[in-house]
Image 1 (cartoon, rainbow, N blue to C red):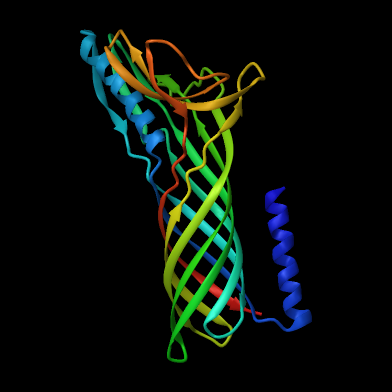
Image 2 (image 1 turned 90 degrees about the horizontal axis):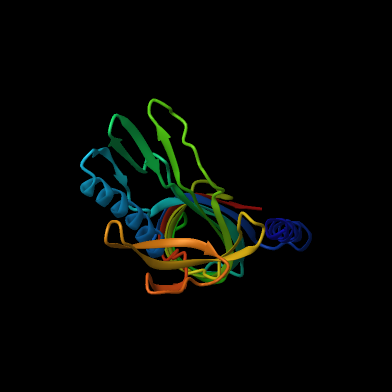
Length: 284
């Protein structure tokens, strides 16, 4: 529904360009994004540490390879409708899509257990759809080149997914014993950026943009296998068999309690970071 509403608003603005003669421009961009994702990375690291410690204390086990890559790089796409008030000042309404994942190949361990070899995986994904109102200030550098600053804020709808899988070699497909954890939340988003624009034709420009991002959505909710609604919690759980405190992210109906749990709180999907994008700006 949010995406349909955004599309309708953008179509209304573009139609207004024709009716009222407004200086409206469509700005499309894509690039790479860096995300903090502290809670997710701690949980991935905890999963890896527990398995590696199990290998160390099991005489018939051996680690054959693998590991967990830090989850920080993703993709970002953005579209904006910009209203120019004059050559220097403009305002925009924009939306887009942020996405990142740690795939099965990037979060797996191959372990020899006696005569059998298992591959364990813990993939995770994050995505978000923002809706942002921004202001622009342009610094013309001649007829074709200009620098610009932008700042804005708005709302963001985020999703988090993870799951545990394993396969016994020579199988090539992972078996996932339970449903994936799927949780959603809404949060706020603030951005500040700078860039350079070059006019290749009268109505067409290319640009490069670097943008800083501040967004830490929490209160993630999702459906549990029994149909009830749970909250995504971050906590550390003591695993006595390996004598470690394992950082975890779990959908639960209530916060875990007891001596084997500590640092219990609602999980935060920390999207703080920055992005580097290139794109095109078209004047109507």
